[in-house]
Amino acid sequence: MTLAGDALFNLMLNAAVSFWFGLLVVLSIRRFAKPSRTAIGVALLLLPFSKLFWDLRFGIPESSFFWASEHGVRQQLGSFQIGFGAHRWGIAPEGHLWAMHEGGRSPQSIADLASRALRFHVNVYAASALSFTALAIALANCVTRGFELAAFRRQARALLGACTTLELRNIGRRKVRVFSSRAYAGVPFAGGLFCPYVVLPAFMQERLTDQEREAVIQHELGHVRYFDLALLVPLELSCAFFWFVPGVKWPLQKLRTLLEQRADDCAVAAGIGRAAVANALLVVAECATGKAPQPVLAIAREPSTLRGRIQRLLNPEPTRAAKPWLAYARGVLLLWLVLGTLQASACGNHP
Image 1: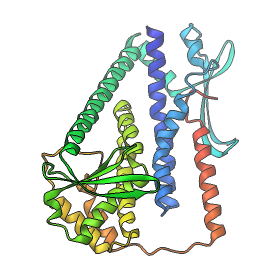
Image 2: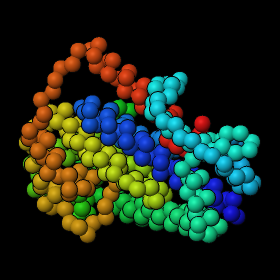
Image 3: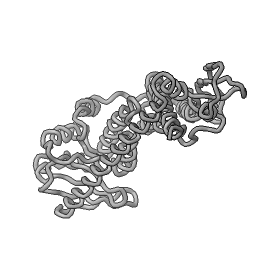
Image 4: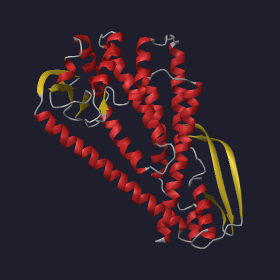
């Protein structure tokens, strides 16, 4: 049991280190490169989660000092190396911790040091107790979030049964039904991964002009077009499970804002005036009540981002035309850096 608890503690703490390593790269790129394309912004915000799962899939290698220490091998000396490493996909910063022992030298992680410190200075079962407690809370969070999503799905099914079909829209090869409901008093939202739909409250349509109503529909169709639901639900569950990782919800919050901005852009690209889209946002925010269930995708789900979205619509930043070769070179460099980051070591289990 102690071995399993120590291994779980190792993986959990190194997951936090991996996440923060990826987040540091994202903050650096956003600070200096300032990518303007939404697709690049979405990919960057997914990098911390990608780094976390990338490292977790390797587990604890046989060469790690973790296994030797669990069999009673004592560390004699240690060393730390930091610099840049060359990988198949790029050059990325690296940090390595090494344990010197009678059998030679083995890679170790920050979690190894923390686990042994707890074992010798607190209690032999301290790391196991912490890891199993964190795992229990993580599973409880996932179950709770799963029940919430299932409850909303049941509510949505009951809601759709009493809705009136307004029209049928085509998104590529998919058909999206647009419904109107008098029983629903929340914000318009999109749902359904394989059979997508959009729900509009009937009372809200009376407050919207024809152009504003079209802006709302095009916004929700933008979520459907880019499969935002398939992206957000796994991330919601991931944040619930990795609750012990500091700052794990920050990329998700930024990603939500970015997806809402992209959906706003979809409405503008469909020919809706920016002022009409901004007015639609205000009307939706004013009409929505707090008693209605909160869908995963909605035009005004996050009130804190409303002001920024309206300012972005009414005062768009001027776009600078970049030379094709320069844009291509930036894209290759960015991809190289991201792939290198995934393979880089951040004082984890891997040499």
